[in-house]
Every structure is written in C-alpha cells, then in structure tokens.
Image (cartoon, rainbow, N blue to C red; front, side, top):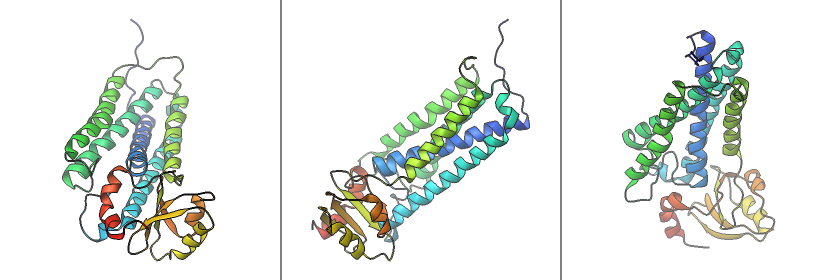
Length: 275
C-alpha cells in the first residue's frame, strides 16, 4: 500500500506547532480585516455600530482601531514565539500540513468569531454600515473568509501535502512572513491620495502647527469639524504624511472619507461645510 500522511501524534511539539499556526492565522485574519475594512475600503471602524456622543468622536474610533491592531500584534507575536519553541517539531512527518491547516483554522475561526460576536451579538459594527441590508454583506464575509478557510483546512487535514517542495521550514517562514507583512502594512502611514486626505489630531493637539506646515505647500483645506480636531485636505506639492504625525496628527487617511466612513461623518460635513 502507498504511504499516507497520518495525523501527527499529540506530542508537546506537535501541539505547540498547531497552536503557533492557529495564532498566526488569527493574527493574520485580524490584520486582514483591519487593513482592508478599516483602512483601505473604510467601510467601518471597530466601534461604528455604537451610539452615543463619545462614539461620534472620530478620534475615539481611530483609537479603538489602533488598540485592535495592537491586540493582533500580541496574538501574532505569541504565534511566532510558539513556532520558535517548536524545535524538532518542524522536522516531524506532516509538519508542513499541520502548519497550513492550523493557519487556515485560525484565519477562519477569527472571522466566524468576529461575525457572531461583533456583527450579530454585540452589534459594535457591521461589514458595511452604509447599505440598506447589512446582513447580506455580513453573511457574504462570513462565508468567504470564515466557512471556506475552515472547510479547506478540514479537507487538507484529511489529505496530504506534496512530499516534494513543501518542507515545514518553508511553510513556517511563509506563515510568519505573511503575518509580519500584514502587521507592517497596518502600521504604515497612509499615502496622500490625490482625491484628498482626512487628518485626525491627537486629543489636546492644536491645529496651528499642522496648518502652518501645510501653508508652505499647495495643500488646500476642504473642511473641518467644529472642534478643529478633524480636517480634510487636498494635498499639493510638498505634502508630507510623516510630517503630519510630527505636528499632532493621530491618523491620516489614504482617501477623502470613502464608502462607509462618508456616511459616518456626513453630519459633520453638513454642519461645517467646505472651507
């Protein structure tokens, strides 16, 4: 009979390897959501579904997103530590399969848990906050990034990976690299888009230094909120995103409040108008 890739015995190294892959999958899933939904598409913030004056402050929403990413850094770091402690487990038969399956389980489990806890039980946000039927988008996201990875992991767990070209160390480096790259993207300041950028100042930071720096470029003010804590600019020559953080910015958006964020700040724009 041909040799098959049997499940690994439940040794401490094997359990550590599974835990490492699962944690890396959870961390990558959180970064994936945060980067795509909070930063790129800007369909929602972590706490966009909560009502109340404090949650209407964009600085509170951005801070919550930052704390969420910090939690993902901790989870991904725990996965890297567990992977480093696996030692000989990386050279055990079937180790590559264990890593890939664990990663898929972690990625899928994160999206299932996020859907159930965040979208449907607590309602702190939905996938899209600006559509008449948010449940459709919730279910679509749940199926694509929750159920599909879990099913793929289950199928792969019962099968095999090719014996050639899939050493466990390669799989380990790929998973760690994916998590590290996602974390780096999440931490990277957004580039100024030609359509405009939104800048949120840190609590207590005056707008004067920021405006003085921008006055030396061709940057144009589009609007601001009544408190002077949130500004929208049309970038010009000499616009420096990094310099904005040195002058009091807490968050710099890559685009002028697209999609879901536009609905979230619509009242602010109506109240202040363009400037």
